[in-house]
Length: 182
Image (cartoon, helix red, strand yellow):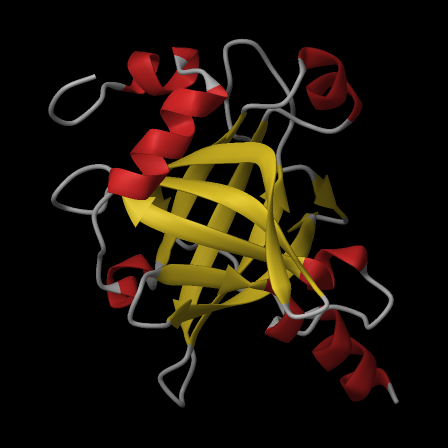
């Protein structure tokens, strides 16, 4: 792949090619994420795992009053072709995997350990490095890593994010919902 890869090139890429794209992707200002939902497509996993979990999802990003950018995943109806229509419960989108967006100087990281998930949620060990694949930051590539014993372990789970629309629903992290109910 030369230049900015097309959507089809990314969807057809091997894990080796995805790793190269992640390593050579562009750093971007995480502030450009705030206020938007991105359509997500899972990459790099065997089809049988995707059938058990999901192929498409969404990620939403907001800026908090203190300036911190946070986000969450939105479970989507699985369809072919994809629609990215959120699953809902009582008219509210089903969300999971809340995270904060960090820029550690070396790159943008989605940190699920600080996202307000329940302490028992295994997603708390996930850290997603994220790079831009275009100059505007409308197409992003990420990988799910695991933070264990002070080390980050790469997984074969990559994902493509494509800027979609302004956020329509702001989700509250599970621990914040629990604290309010107490």
